[in-house]
Length: 255
Image (cartoon, rainbow, N blue to C red; front, side):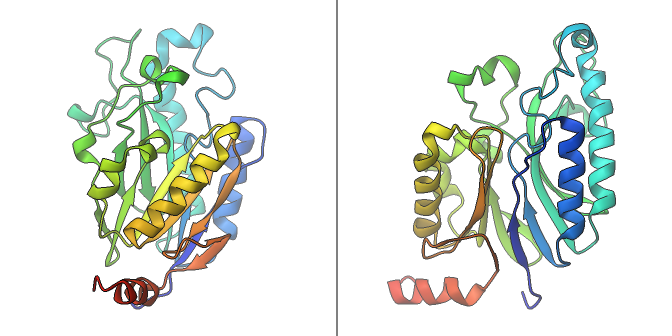
């Protein structure tokens, strides 16, 4: 890849879903062209940031999330450009087996809800991935339908290999091996503040073990964002440099 690619991780501070969406859109608009941006897991809604999907709305949950989703994606794609890319996770009630444009209405009182990662620019969605390993202490298994672990794989992006681990999936070392050979791994999270050291330590180790860049972003509980270089150094943001990966692998005798 010859073009410069800025790696920029974001974390949000606003206190409502509407404000967080505008905050994220403004940060995206302010980012330079040729940027790969990462926001945190469920960065806009949390599990249900404003109680928007509870109470009287719960009976129409699939449709409510679908409507919210449409507004969310439209605003973010307005803020993006053809050469500016954003990764984040969001709530979706899309029925994958019926296609991405199909809302699941099989049972309106118990729709399938997924925690979905998207990588998109102003024109397209380049990658989607449902969270497959759910965090049971937070009762995620009662909120979400789990994705398929087999779908956690490296994917091609502008001549690079990218991978995604969503929050708790970071703790599964078998997934690290599946992403071996990635140039960049993105780890959006909603990590507990008390486990900050675990999140940072695991992301640093992932960068070192896989000799790659690891973009991190966590908000709502633990608020932290940055990029681990392939040597384990944490920086606020950086420019992707394939030569750094090559140099490290050469020095280790694995290239």
